[in-house]
Amino acid sequence: MLVRSNGILTYTAKDIAYHLWKFGLLDKTFRYQPFGSGVWSTHSQGVEQDIGRADRVVNVIDHRQEYPQQMVKQALQALGDDKQAAQLHHVSYGVVSLSRATAESLGVDTSDGRSSYPMSGRQGIGIKVAELVAHMEAVIEAQRSQHEGLDSRSIAAAAIRYYLLKFHLQTEVVFDLEQATEVSGNTGVYLMYSYARACSILDKGRFLTDTAVNDIAAIAAYPVAEGLAPQEYAVLKQLAYWPETLEEVVAGLAPNVLCTYLYELASLFNHFYTACQILKTDEGTQGFRLWLVGRYRDTMHDGLSILGLPAPNRM
Image (tube, rainbow, N blue to C red; front, top):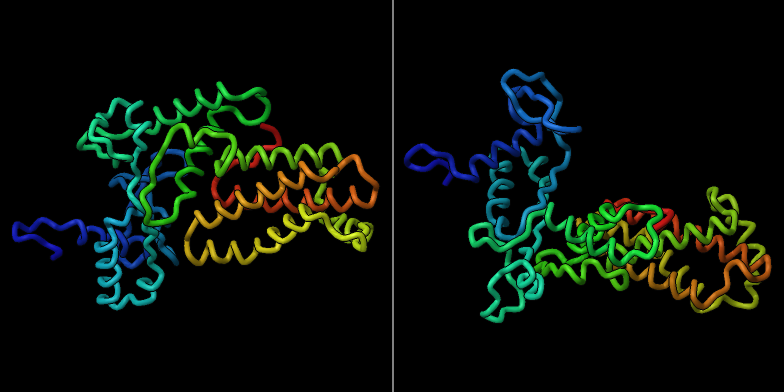
């Protein structure tokens, strides 16, 4: 059903037209005016802009919209736009809920004893983004021993983003304020601290330039005959999985897979840092281990960038 008996279009009908615009399949041209930095909105007195005409469309909408999304795809096929229909993708995610402790802190009645409370605008269960970022910023600020590099607000925003991305798609996302601000475990703060540590090591080792220049020399100088330390081998093995992990993330549109990989990589790197001398060792070993730190830094930088998190030299 696309049009009701009273002539009013259904949500699906409007969405079909919206996606025809996204793919540049409409024969009409819209006018736009600036809405914000890099953002435009339609306006009758605006100027023509080449917006839309996408080769691929990815809709990030929760799983309750799965059926309407399928109807839009079938509508494109019925109109003969099979190529565009094949390039329409729905990334389905679970409903975001509040943990019981977080719900209580926000004044939600938790007397029914449930473990989580789905956010609902109608029921008044939820938290505004501005308030959430401000709360996280205050927690981060109180936990910090140093205030170099990123400001607390940027760290807070990154922590929130990572917390939401790490959940498996289509599962319920239970948001807990305390867990999201932890500096250890599978958190964005932990990954950023680990990256900053690698930058500091390379800074002290005078490897601020691209370490790829030293690849051959570093490996050749390392006494391979003595064997790699278990911690060195573990980091190398995880780094070797980076290309195929990235392919899996892109093919499945699954950021949680990337989060898991980066957390495991950071954990292995920190074990390596704790167990192996990097700067205070012989020249051959030092060169190889600095090279390994450089490879870790570069891979972590790419991963953080893909997730939309900052890669700070200092925290």
